Amino acid sequence: MRILQIVTLITPDGAYGGPVRVAINQSRALVEAGHDVEVVAGALGFNGDMPAIFMEFPVRLFAAQTVVPRAGFAGLTSAPLLLWLTMNVRHFDVVHIHLARDFVTLPSAAIVRAARIPYIVQTHGMIDASNHLLAGPLDTVLTKPVLKRATQVLYLTDREAADLTELTNGRLALRYLPNGVPSTAGRVQGNSSLEVLFLARLHKRKRPLQFVEMAIALHKAFPDVQFRLVGPDEGEAKSVQEAIAKANLGDAILWEGALDPVHTLDRMSQADLYVLPSVDEPFPMSVLEALSLGLPVVVGRSCGLAERVRANGCGTVFDESLNGLTEAVAEYLADQGKRNSAGIRAQQIVKQCFSMNAVADELQVAYEMLVVGRSRSWHGWAKWPRRIEEGSTD
Figure (cartoon, rainbow, N blue to C red):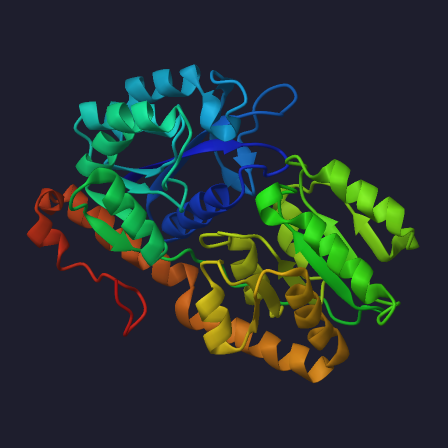
C-alpha cells in the first residue's frame, strides 16, 4: 500500500514537537510492516539543500514561509509542498494528515479531497476552541469541511473529541488512537549524581520558569542534584536564563539549549526523573518516551496522560502549583525505592497500552478498509475497534 503522511513543519531543533515524532514513528512501523510510506512537510532552519533523512527516516521537505505574521506555526504555508501534492497525490492509496489550523495541512487536505483520494486526519489536540480572529473564517472555509469529509478523525482525549464535535456541529467519524513509542533499550545506569530533566520547548504553556523556580527551592535540601532544561526557545528562554543567573547556583541548574530530535531519547536516558509542568498538554510524546525508558514522571493535572500516570503509579500528578511541583519532585529525590518502583511500572504501562506495534496494526486496518472502498460507509467503520485498550470508553 502507498501511504502519504503530511505534517506541518520539520526543523533541525524539532520545534514542532510531538506531531513530527508521531508521524515518523507511525511511518517507520508501517514500513517495517511492508508498506510504502512517504512523509512530506514544510521546513525551516536548514542550511543548504533540504535533508532527505530526518530522525533516521526518509522525508521529503519543502521550504515553508510565513503568510500570517505573529501567528506562530498557524501562519505558515509551503507553496512548493502544495504544488508537489497537487501533481502527485493520485500516486497514493491513502493520505494521513496531521492536521492543525495552518496553511500547510488544511490546504493539503482540500487538495486531497478534490482528488477524491481517501484521507484520515489526526489533530493531536491542536484544533480546539479558539478566540483568534483568524480562527472563525478559517474554520468556516477549510477546517470544518476538511473534518466533516475525512473518512476518519483520530483523536487522543475525550476533551479533544468533544472540541472537534462542537466545532463541526455534528457527527464526525471519530476514532480514538493513542500515540505510541518504539521499544527502547532503557536508561543509562551509573550516573554519579541525580538529574531532574525538563525536555520540551521553552514556551509559556510548558512553564519552564516554574521548573527553574522548583529547582531553586529544592537546591538547599538536595545540593548534589542537577536540574537540566533541554529544548528550543519559544519565548521563555530569556526569563529562564535570568532566573538561573539570579539564583547563582553554579551548574546546579542549566539550560542546555535545543537538541537534534534524533538525540532526545539518548539525552533523556541519562536522567533520573522527567518533569513536564505544562498546562493543557493533550498527549505529550516526551512523557511517553520518558516512561518507555523507565523514568518516573511528574506531570500537571491537565495533562492528557495524567490519569494514566496516577492510576498506574508510574509518576506523580501535581496540582500545577509551584508548591505542588516542589513537593512531588522532592519525594522522588528523597526515595530511591520510589523512583525504582515507578520506573518499573512506567515501562510496563508503555508495553501494555502504548506499543508502536499496536498503533501500527490499527492504522493498517484503517488504511486497508479505505483502499477496499468500505471507508465511505459509517457502518463499515463501526466495525473498527473504538479503542486499543480494553474497557475504555469514549
